[in-house]
Image (cartoon, rainbow, N blue to C red):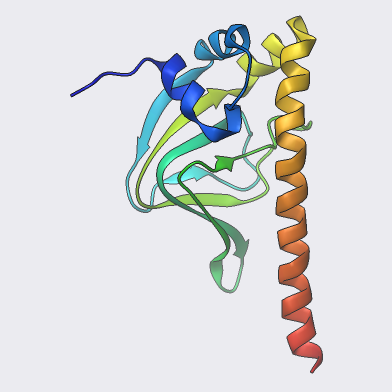
Length: 156
């Protein structure tokens, strides 16, 4: 079995594609491999968002909690997706529950470590922000389309 370094794994994730070698090297100390079993929570709504995940393998359900219905899935993330941008925006809290659907392998990156490195190296911070901004826009657009679909059907 071939053992890969964290730097090599980070380098191959599409989210970090093209990131400068020195920035990848800087991220290594903030990263570690994690594994979740089916049903394990990766995040809980209203808890501190102190990490984000680069999904290497598997699926993650993104859910909102409704008191009368429990968790309702609003999105599913999978291999090569990114989970979490709440670590960038104060007050750094999760807005959704996320749970593993089957086995999930991911890289988890420590948010405080990344914020500190981004403050010390604004080029790194800017590179990360340039990668997260389109992701945020895509997810907000998808949510908007879901709302239009739901409310469009109920208005008929």
